Image 1: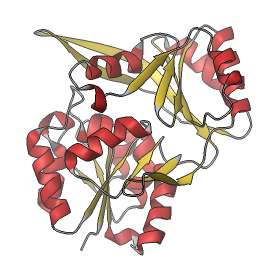
Image 2 (image 1 turned 45 degrees about the vertical axis):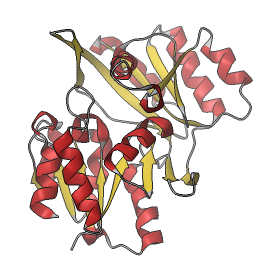
Image 3 (image 1 turned 30 degrees about the horizontal axis):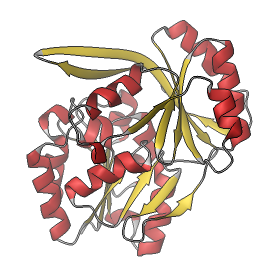
Length: 289
């Protein structure tokens, strides 16, 4: 019997408009009421995940920043963390600024951005449909280097790098890989997000990568949690759609890829469900839990 289900958010639990459908919520709640712990494992910061965890009645733990931290919902505290050192953040900012490429810095609570572009634009549009307490916090910073340098207490989960030109993007990736002590996520396909504006649907397409400190992964954070809860990996279901979900899908007792996942994830999954547009998460839980 499965005791723990770890679910990614974007492209997985959330549909193409960034929403958990009522049916998916109900199925998750039924799964939790059966005694199976359902946790979110996302790249988002704490506040953004916390609001969604409350919606689905997940009340124990969640994983943020792609495994950079594990958060205890009941105690309202971080129980495991692997933050990106400030000097590395500054080094990456300098490279991005010198090459005029878009980037974001994720703190524990907020996404710091220089402009509303790419993934941040998607989050902003998503925010317009939500009450303030459920929104992903976004701060537009004019001089990011100085802002980060002056922040003494701020902790950094990860950074994202985005561009719609593949040649420019690959050039930056090569430069970033020369920095020691960081992990540059190997994403080679375009990310596609759908924004609804009135009756019109607008697609945002861009190449992106995510940067964390070395040895950060959703699976390593899950392993920490499994040890604490005395759960074997055979008792875990992991559901995701992208390269940052690969290891947990590969290692979990049941690794599930969404229907429109990146091919490398589909190839290693034990089971492929429907897409996030077709409530694939709900179908998996109904079938296996």
